[in-house]
Image (cartoon, rainbow, N blue to C red; front, side):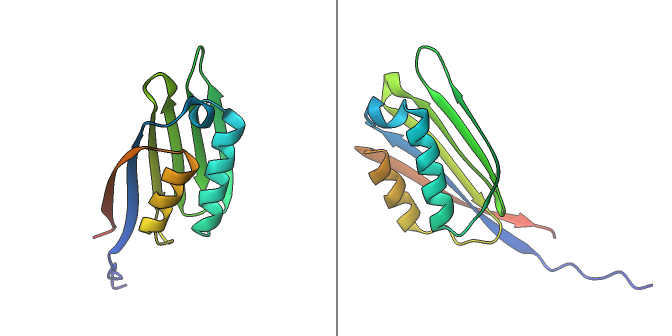
Length: 121
């Protein structure tokens, strides 16, 4: 039996650092859940499973396993900082997603990196 040739596939991974975010946005677990749900809906990805944790005295980690990979938000309200990761092997991650996250979390500054990840050889 002849081995089937694999066609390389790429996935996009957005790594976004947000600075100057008010604590009212990044230290509210209900709001972080809303942000994750909004972004997943906007990229057309369903949520398979999700987990959120509120740290004491401040900070939140939220992770959603989505139909195309994952999305996470980790916050440090004492620094006004949020670290966001959106990885999708099917849906397009556009600059509009970055703008939405900046707006939702009221960031004063952002640093964006878009990685292309090769699946298969």
